Length: 310
Image 1 (cartoon, rainbow, N blue to C red):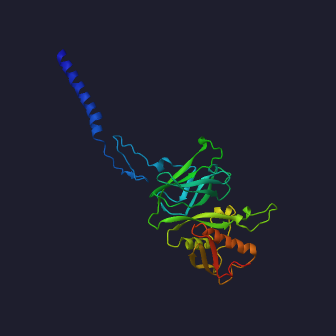
Image 2: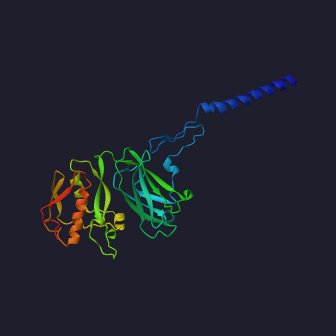
Image 3: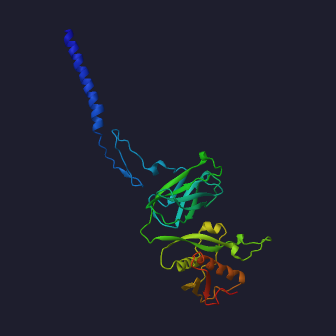
């Protein structure tokens, strides 16, 4: 074969190879492969999907935070709309706990802590198996629509290499009335003993719990009515906080404030507010301390005056 013809063939083949390569590597980059899988919307509103020439799929933050082999949460679910107080339920391996508990937090979208609580194991935690837990967390009014529930592995060592946490995206119920946090005062006898261990029945045993109530024109009455329900969480009771409320038939009928003196009228058809001086004193103190958190209240009168008498 003529040498010139051979050279021409080699040149033509080389050009074809180069052309195909340019088309494949450049042309394909300019026209990404069309992907059929729809993009996902993450909890923070960002969209992820197959966008590159190789259709690589980016994951949402919650997928990167999957810890199903260590801790699982049944309530709340991802992106559930929540409000305070919030019940948390799930199960975690015994290694997640220390002394049968671990801390939980709720933060807003800016990372600000809105509330904290302690999750308690519901059975023996000294195991590597899954152990059920629950917690009740009260949190303040969030400034953002989105937030995060954070369940932290208890780390008594304090060493960062032993830290771990599960983050669950949540959404706040902002459709209801705005909320305010109030303190309700109950009684803890373990904090009210003398040197001999005798219960003193004094104000020293009062202990507050925080609750969120709607913002209304009657916040003092709202706080008292909530106090009278006597709704304490299992965690609060485990800490020694107690109350005799609710008392059958005892209801707040009205309130009036005049120059700092708050008059509270109660119905007590069954005389449930009577009893020994220790008991009635504590019942009295709980209401009095709860209303005195409001700066406009300096003293309290109970009506009728026979209420809370030994």
